[in-house]
Image (cartoon, rainbow, N blue to C red; front, top):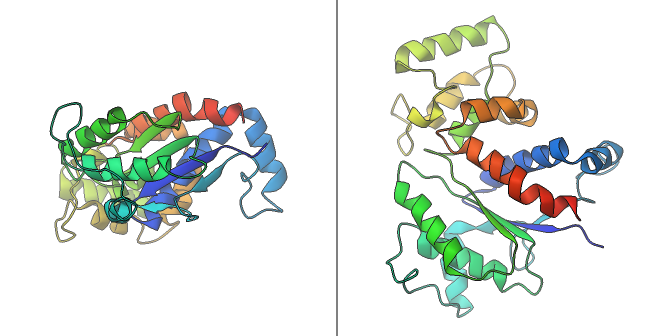
Length: 253
């Protein structure tokens, strides 16, 4: 039997990697046979979890670019317009509907779909995602949204823990500049303007000036740390949904 396929749609390949790493970490943490398989395979396989799950986009791609979803859906003649349970669509509702329709139209739809989309302080985007999910009878068991507030760099900042004195001093300087701790309150950061001192990308760049890069820390930060510091930025919710909704699909194979 083939491992369950997980569809993934996002705004960039970098966002895809961040989401995949986190999902895989939860699977390893929650399912003993997945952890055992990973330990047995990671030295000999590029993807040590390949026997447990696969990732894909549509039309044979590794992931679906959300920016292209509406155009692709129209090219296939899929109906992305119209209301949502009689209500007009909120921000991104049509885009998310297009993405889900594309996955649903695959010859073999995935068992679950994960969609990553920055909220950028626009709560209507989360509402639009929920509308799209509720509007269809989808052939996949689960649709999960990775919806960072304000953007996915905030999740990496929530994962950043100082590892030496220079990093502790750097974080203290940022606290003084911002008047809050960006690692415990990443939702207070901004997006879209890297000249803003509170911009998440700028803050992440400052934190990772030296030492291990953000993705390396993302690989091994304790999951309970992410849940403790990622409540308001959408991170804790995503971890919880992966644990409660996605883990059972992979566990039964």
